[in-house]
Image (cartoon, rainbow, N blue to C red; front, top):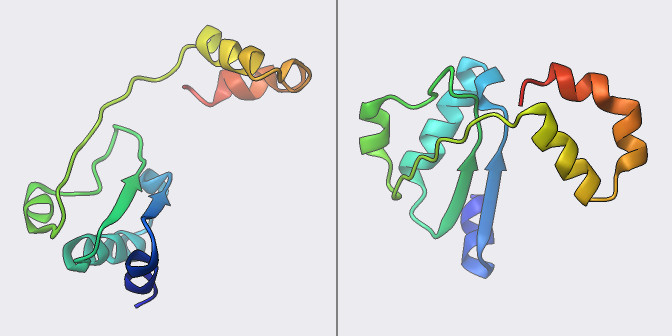
Length: 104
């Protein structure tokens, strides 16, 4: 398996974003990976709190430790501050509508 080979060579991080949009087949693959991987891989699974892609049973079946972090949405002013601190003011002026629509 490719992930096993990567993990054996170096520390490995797999980031799976927007799992709240994932179809059932994708979630099934994620569940399989999390229950079968036996190597030191950090899986970062990002999803909106409106759903949980993992049932209590699936969490208990995971071969690796599980930690869930609940983050709140950013306010518009917090998002703007991040853009300002990253010196992305020009981008910010063009995308204020996007920031307002992404809901955190």
